[in-house]
Image (cartoon, rainbow, N blue to C red; front, side, top):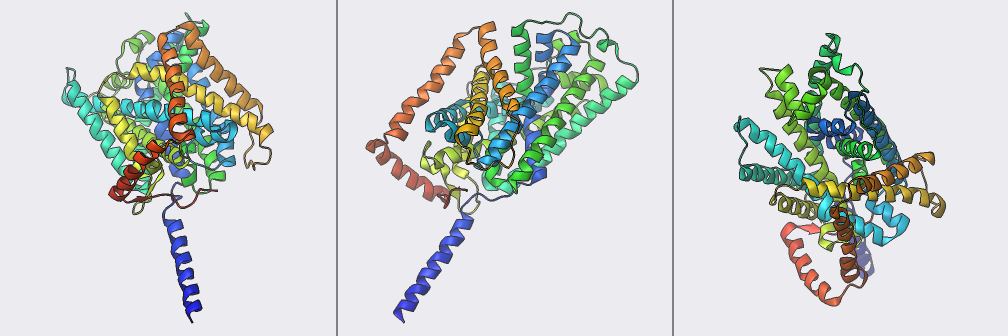
Length: 487
């Protein structure tokens, strides 16, 4: 009788444990439509509305400017296809992190997570929220510059709002992304249709002799690519949330093949629309190209443009937060960050501690204000890690032949992307050498100090400090460790 009750108790324990297994792991809530929306929504941020003049400034003529936008789209698609092979071969969230771990071991993976979490991702999140804030404030301070403190407070409020939404629910974060992506596609459609109407009316004088005065130096072309690719940044975002994708073998490549070419077509048509209304000189003098376009084409309804650009930027910020939180979660799970960062909310089933940490760092970056120059120098670090990750794909073709590859891209595609990333890393340093590139490399390598102190050797005093902190935060936020690693 006692043995039976013991067996019954064990059975109850097993069933309770299996219930916990289901409830404390990330849920597969993201389908194909949401996947496309994350790609489109994260890529189309503030870039295409503000920075076409950077590409034009480096090419100095209309024809090569449009070619650069198309070439950047092709490169982003090729890079994303390589990431599709990696994402279906290693179905773990965290983008480049698990791929670098699998290909080269823990040190490159740790240096990627260190650079991304401390600078690249939170600073870009902060900049997107600052540009959102500037557009919104501009509506209330017409004719004068809004006070810096107002811009920063609104940007901090945007970060708090986005972080809260994503910490509350995966589905809610996904719905918000879908709504803002739909809103930004409205303004994209307005600009494209207006441009096509002007084109049909015969406004083609800016396209005549479109290759006249082209700048052909290697440095200028590389900087034009740099600025164009900045507007495409986000092409790899879906790989950060592979664990939450329904049917990733089908939906990951489908979302890439639909999403990025869609963005490329939109970008080329929007640039054509800008050139139907503005001469290259006028475009270069414009502070915000889309707003100038709106003033000339949509007056008296030109207020629509800053409003929808604000929607666009907050959608991009939401997409960035949704995916970057997963990188912190995966790094914490591997023991490369504080363990509590890999914990999952019991009630909400989201990586809440990781998202809150990300939000706090982003708010710190808002305080100094102008961090654009910092991010420009870290763009080259981003391409360093993109190149390393895709090199890892080539390496694993020979070292990890046992891994199943539902998608297998032809070998020439990763080789092209590796060569282009080498060009993008070296060209700006050669054409305009600056100390900041050296500081950037030193910062990346400084992550090794933390790696050997806290990850590799795991000193006892560090453990004694972190254990009570983890315990307290766990009780405060009602979070638990994930019960199983995804297969």
